Length: 116
Image (tube, rainbow, N blue to C red):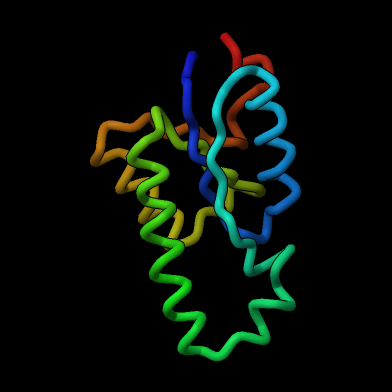
């Protein structure tokens, strides 16, 4: 497989997996787009301190930005630790497929497949 740009999708619980996957892909010359805010892991404390109105505004904005990242990507790679795919991630998969993007799954890839 040869992709120029891949957007990583998955639960923000899996921050470490996002970062290690990004490092692997980028070390193989693939531009990798990831979420900018990890509300269920790295940014959990900050997220918990925000008023609900601010959270709602951020969720809408971040979701839109993430879908734009999918638009400019050749494919998405779903970080499906334990094969977990939540509703929001399923929406991203559906959107990517509807827009002709390849959908890859972290749980099914071997490291050497990134740079075939």
